[in-house]
Length: 407
Image 1: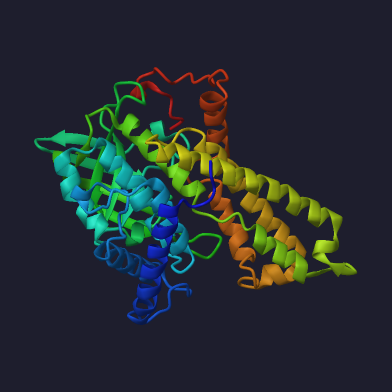
Image 2: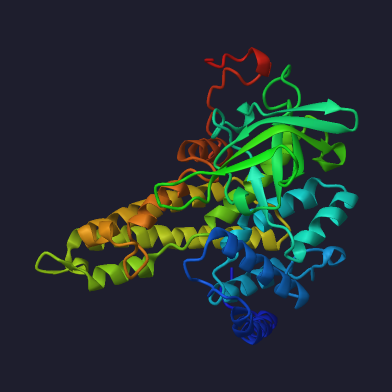
């Protein structure tokens, strides 16, 4: 793979830079709070939606989408170029990871033409932000073990249950949702996939206070929520297949959402006293940074390989699990090492100069859970990438209502 821009890509990059330079200053002036400051989640959502609207109106909002839905049908490489330049000036991409990285590809893959026409324009123009109603208190890693039920009632479905760890549910307008519609068949076969308005009667969102001090995760309670059958994606009972589309895209999105932080930890080590010198002078610190540098280089090349696959019309594969696994563990190890170097200064400070304080240490714990736990990812890698024998799953073919629940 040639890492350099082609002549056409270089021209596209220059056009992207020019548009960003012309719009970013004016955009920041239109809001009472600065982009990048410690804004609330509601303010960040407002900013993200307004920025998406501006991009859409300028022709930069949905670059790879079909023109029929407001896109430009540019190549994956060109969309990546814009994302690279955008990240330098606008730190809001994380607000749209679920919307653009998970909901959109799932709707485009499994939605009808009518559903796409109804749902995609409001995403394109920044009107709606989406969340993902998957995990449950008793079914986090084992998504097929969910108990939230949907029962058919005429042309509608009545939904009851609870979801948990739902990122940005408290500021989201719509959601993708997996529920159980048939408990009499094996757990993977009785699931159905829906989209749902988060303002529907019976939807209650309760933010969860996290160790990092944030509350981006939420509990969501669904009590007699009535939605029309027109909000079902794909066939009844085909929810697992649809969910796999979401999860494959999720691991690409989550794995590419975070920096490898090599430069940040190097700067901490260069500027922080340790023993009789600087932290960077300690052989153990240098070895740890070198180990992570090598892993970060590997992650970069895996990402480029994925990009090459997507640019040729392929779809995200299980290899994305490798990036997500290594990055999650690595970021937590890196944050822990930063706290060790900073000693009590890192514990007491809200954030150190490089952004690697106690807040980041606690947040990186979530990196190892969201998008699939380490254990689930290792199973995926062993079975689907390396071709090793599948893990024994004694409940795989047992009707869900006959699986012991421990209740």
